[in-house]
Amino acid sequence: MKVLYMKLNTFLLILNLVVVTALAGYILWQFRTDKKAFILNQRVFVSYKGTQVLEAKLASLRGSYTQTLDSMRRTLEVSPNAVLIDAYESKREQFALAEQELSDKYTADIWKQINTHVSEFGKSKGYDFIFGATGDGNLMFAGDAYDVTDDIIVYINQKYEGD
Image (cartoon, rainbow, N blue to C red):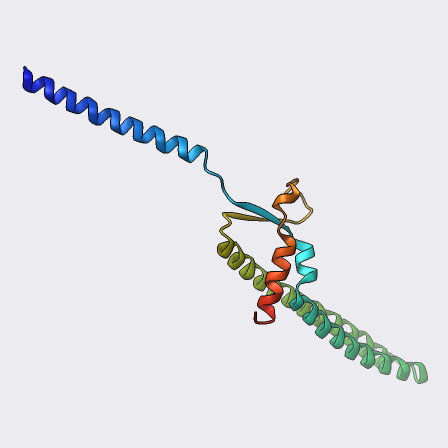
């Protein structure tokens, strides 16, 4: 009988320890605080020096296209004919398509760089989450204390310039 009583006591002690440990873990998990922040995506994109460099490249390309089209238009003014008009329209469409494709590629490249830098920033600063506010309802509200947009802009521009 004494042995059975000791086994029961041991079982109850172990059971109590398991229950208390599980309860303590649950309570700690419920009250943990995640470090979170948000950035204003469009402001980060526009302020990123990489965006500004690629926009300058696009503007240069656009200027080159405009010069070519202006030259063709001047030729058309002097001697308009169907072949030249077709060539002009074809070149205009070709330039517009090439510019759009390059713009899309640049935008994708810039977001890839920004996302990489934001991830590095988050890890280095100990964030659990960094949300991007796009103005389309993804993040409807956050207090100003959680806005790290300016910090991100400084960080990614330092990364762009090579620290």
